[in-house]
Structure formats: C-alpha cells, structure tokens
Image (tube, rainbow, N blue to C red):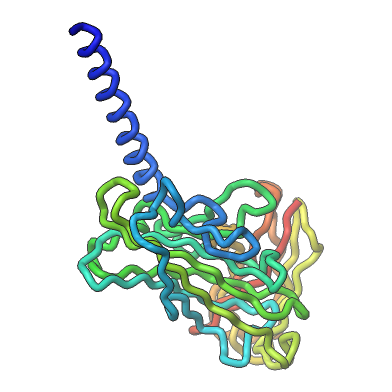
Length: 292
C-alpha cells in the first residue's frame, strides 16, 4: 500500500512539472518568439507550429498581414520605409504574437530593421551577427486588450545597398487563446515581397538637402555636414539601434544659411551601429553609421 501511494505521489509530481513546463514555455513566448521562426525556407521553414510548441492546429497562411509604404515599383536602396504587421482574428482574441525577418533571394539579411517602439517590439536574438535579423513582440506588445480581435506592430526598415535585388519579408503570427500555455493557439504565416526599384540608387539631387557624415567609421568625434537646397533646415538626430534619439543636432527651422557642420562628441558611446535621422515635415530619412 505504501508503495502504491509513493508511486501515485511521484506520478502527480511529474505531471505537475510537465504542466508547469508547458505553462512556463507559453509565458516565456509571450515576451517574444524564439529567433528563426518566420517560415523562411533558408531557415528550415520553421515556425512556432512545431511539436511541443503551438501545434494545436495546422499551420495556416494569411496574405496581406504584412504591408508597407514601399512604392509599387520597389524600394530605393538606402531609403527608409515603415513596415506594418497586422494579425486579425474572427473572435475577440486579446493576445497575439509575431516575428519577421527581411531576407534576400539567397537568405541573407536584407537591409536594417529599426525599432521605433521598444515597448511593443524588440530583436529576437542578442547574439551577433544575427542580433538584428528578426524582430518580434514584447510582453506588452503581445496584448490586444484595447483592440480585441486585432493587433498591429510597426517598425522602420532601411533598404539595402544597390544591387541587392528582391527582398522578402518572412513573417509568422500567433493568434493565442491567452491561457498561459502553448495549447489552443493558432500559427499563421505571411509574406511581403518587394523588388528593388529599377531607377537604381537614390538621386541626391532630388532632395532638399545633401548630407555628409565623416569620418566613416567614426570614434571619439564625428562631423555631420548638411547643405540645403532651400531655406528649410530639417530636424537632425543621432539615434541608437532601437530608434531612441540620443543627440539632437538641429531643430527644424527656416534658415538663412545654406550649409551647416555639426561637431558631435561620441566618445561616451559604445561601439556599434547608430543612425543619423533627418525629419522634415512628414518626410523621414535615415543614414546608418558605425561607431568604433
């Protein structure tokens, strides 16, 4: 009798541990999907719809869940665009997740993802060199309590260099039942395919200003030179990789001068990738820089 009680107690303990493990996994993924789960064929076409994860229902597909303001004729190399991910449910679902990655026709990382709302999104991996390859939701960003049945995330994307060719945004979405477990959730994939603009490299002559940053890469000190083609000075910011402004170099204003040079002290900044962001009305341009 004692042996039977011991075996039964052991069974209950193991069962609780298994349930706790599944719940913990579901809770962990509420803060973001594991890296490489966007259904890219170059990463094994893996999503979170795998055994032991969110596999209650067959993997689905939803066209149109990834959109952008990239022109129909394609992206212009070096220009920055806004990418929008939207998950939709026919029910009043209040918990969603997503992960996305822009990749070339050979599976290489394409362009640069810029986080514009760190409260809702973050990078899925902190390990170089893939620390900016996948973007996913945060814990706060998984909640759709204020918009039941739908959830939207936005981020900026700086297009890659000329000659990169067609870029595919691979994405996977989780329509969750908010049970703090992996059970009962539905995974869907979506893609956005954008060609490179046939017009080639952006013609600086069509801009209201010409920007030069030197030296490249920079350390200790950096100079930002802007030549205006009209009397409008844009707002100029130095931002980190998440899009957070860490230096305000100039405020948007009407200017009597045609050229400015800003001497920027960067000795206190960690080595890595940063951006010079120019804002003029509703137009936003971003220039990637490297600090050593």
